[in-house]
Length: 114
Length: 113
Image (cartoon, rainbow over all chains, first blue to last red; front, side, top):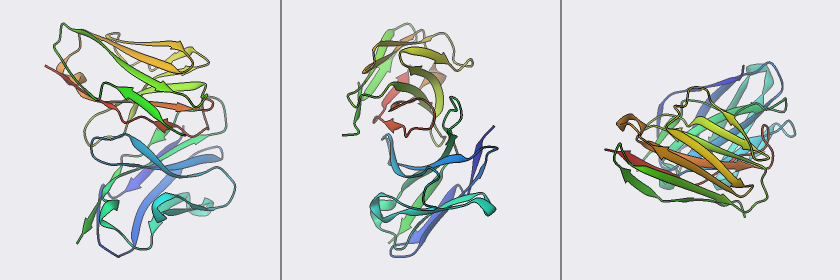
């Protein structure tokens, strides 16, 4: 079975500071990894995905993530936080084998301090 | 265009009511999903339709009944719900079931009185 662990249910950063949201995965087969963002009372919006091509993945809104197999990690970063980045962020995993479901982490709430 | 639409946006219903949630996508996707999301929790998969064939999460109670009239439409029929069923219900679609990116709709906020 696949799973993801998001370290830190709440992260606060100052506006303009580096954003780092952590995600570690567990998978017995090559994983497909996703980061989604959810603003209050809205659906989930795809930020970026890793599908075994380049290990450094660039997404929307200036976010990027690096797949590190040796560390089983897929951390999300943004060089400079903006107030509009305040939201809930979910890491998720699936695979290319069979009808695997998309398994979500527990989420990280990002707060931006003015 | 990666839009999934859901109606209604908000729904309040009593425990004896029958109501339906609707979801639509025009991306030619062959898999569609219903998720339930409680506050401060990740989405939980309820049902998957792939090529209009249903897969069920065995833990979902029978008071939730999905329907897929065609490959673009997905309904969730609600009957005799309980207050604990109050949640955000999200629809998603993907090109194929499994590895492909799932695109989510804005959700229906359901309150059961």
